[in-house]
Picture 1: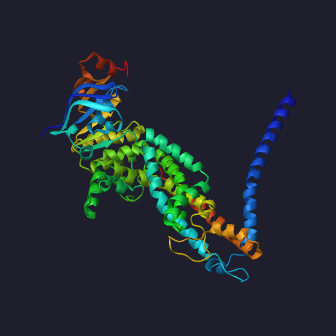
Picture 2: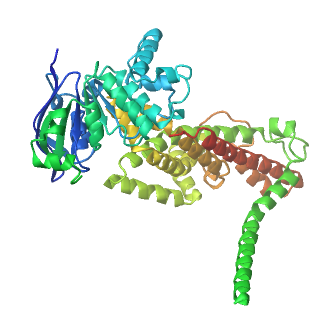
Length: 252
Length: 281
């Protein structure tokens, strides 16, 4: 049951006068992990932020072209409605420091003023934390502050927070770049596990990570989508010379 | 060679001793003030002093209950007036930190902070006392709230500027509207800094006398009416200390002791709040 979750067509992004993304075309299917890979400054983070329109926080940002989530025009709806359908996990774990673990998981509902009966909330919290492979570690300390957790646990808490909203797509913006190797592999295992239920778009500059977790890879270089295809194919027989050079460590 | 090193080490020691000595000297005025106020004031403090109204000279006893109540009313009034404006202005300055209006507002805050308190008293007189044709608690509250504003604004701005940007991103990415992000995420996270600022501003205005001279005016009697003149501890001290009577001088010491205790209390609570409610990121 494959269907297109995110469709990007002829998409360009600008900050002021400088063009960051050039005519990107991309499609991701449901329950696959798509990696955006490329050297720093290539525009991969900008692209992922354009998906939930977080780039608009920067003054002077504008875009041309289209993006569709399922069949809805992303740039035709209110950002706050859009962002409730899209989960996002950031580079640095960012749980809300004044909230307990429990409240952090349901923060998306709580802060938006969406009310549920208590037992349903309990359910959401348990399901989301299990989804993020954190339940066993925190089930006895749900009402402690989220910031007592280790960095890797905090990141999984942030994943649980995103999962609690039942997102149609989960954006992961270099989710492991601030973590140690052990936490990194825990998150990577989690991504592979989560694929069964969620579609994911992952930004990474770690080639090995892209190879380990993703089904499709998009190689972005200087704002251009150089190559897009199944990961195993691209990593074994890259079509473009630049992709090959990047994968073999000639630059980046 | 050896002598050279010794000379340097001696210079080093002299410098150290001087710094420590001067640091101790700068504490001296505070210690002396506390000593004299405690020595002269504490003897006057008893239940009667705290719970009774001033009596005419020649009559024994009496107290400063009206001044305590007055100071409390003035603190509450000026807090109600200044906190909403102060916090919202602080939010604006931290959110739009390089806008043109923000620059002007920031300049105004600095100028306001440097404005002599007596001038603020005159302004409150012109704004509130003159139109209502009466000295009043409200006019005193207005004068003091203007004095609180810059401290609260600065504290809020500085606290919110220290909030990590990724906190705001986390909230916005969940689809939380901007206003709720500010009110439910950013403000609660920075609450300790803002509260500390409010308490320090209270400590600052509690002892202010000049702006009250022609606004709250002072009142020998108990008054709960906000549109009538009201007494306050600093004003009572001023009034008693200026009198020729030794009994009233003693009362002035007692009221000073109370005032210093209240201000010290605000400062200590502010420190406690800053330390205890500190949010860990």
